[in-house]
Image (cartoon, rainbow, N blue to C red; front, side, top):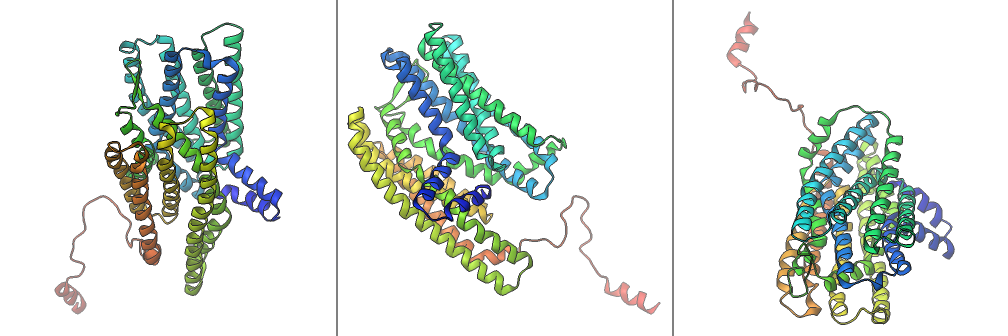
Length: 487
């Protein structure tokens, strides 16, 4: 993440209100712009092309298709992203850039294979059982795979600190999507929901092509060393568990409520709970600024302290190491407290604004009763994720894995219990799971602080591990030694 730190420091060092606003805007542009661009484009197409005039069944089919495309493209990418990110970081540190393209192709194949294993059976079911037209099913599947490619290539551009290009590519892709949808509907009189779905698929495809071409332009050499990539999955399997557990935990409470009285089944294939899903979306937007705040502050403050500590370890005195370690953990505590303090103020303000304006926009009743508890849950969740990132900094994969698994499991079990309660407590399962994960991550950070010296200086090995015949356990024969000494 250190790539944007220099830019943010240049912006914030002037310490004026205008520059602070510019810095916050820049942070938002590189973190959440892609998501807002996609959502904004869908809303714009709906308003301009008359989406609200369509029949209920058509709108539900389109909404369910887009929802599933986004959720499952993120879930299928989760098992690979963390390990590949670690591999890329190590390769860049070693400056063996020719090993990046084998990683890119190997990860791409794994991601597409897993995505197809989940997507193709569902599409067959949607066509055979749901009776959806084959061209509609195929277009939805193409959009799904295109978004998988988008999310996958984003990982490499993020490692290269090319956040601005990510935002520009998403903007270009969604601009093309809007133009395609408008032409199909207004010129060729194609059915609206299919036009929007086809346009989104084309936009995602353009974004993925631009990202892939940028990656290939950055890394032209290929060592063809694919075995090293797969060995990383064996070595860092805990990262697979962490990222999968965290990503699944984000949606598992939705899956639980998809099997309640609120569920809606579309064409005997798509299952969702629109009211709960909408409340979840609003709760996430209430706390989305936590990502911006966290990246901004970590880039500007904590990363520098971590760098100074690492430099002291490699070439400083013992006293320097102790002093830099103390400053680093003080900064870590300060960043967590600042994140909680600032995000709490923002969340309260956004929450009050939501309560005022949502009823005027047609969101009321069940959605507003579910929303408050979910908003509290997402507030805790984003703080928990910040702690997981700090555990990554100190290579505490056990702590990160324990946090992610506990969060996912407790969210699932809690949601099973809370769905039997009144609507205002539906989000308590997410809040409870996030709180348990937050507590575990905090305790692990304290444990890391106490045992960091052991982790830093006592993890080496005297002999390099190798396969072969084990040497004899006897290292010295006293009788033979005396005989040789006499002769």
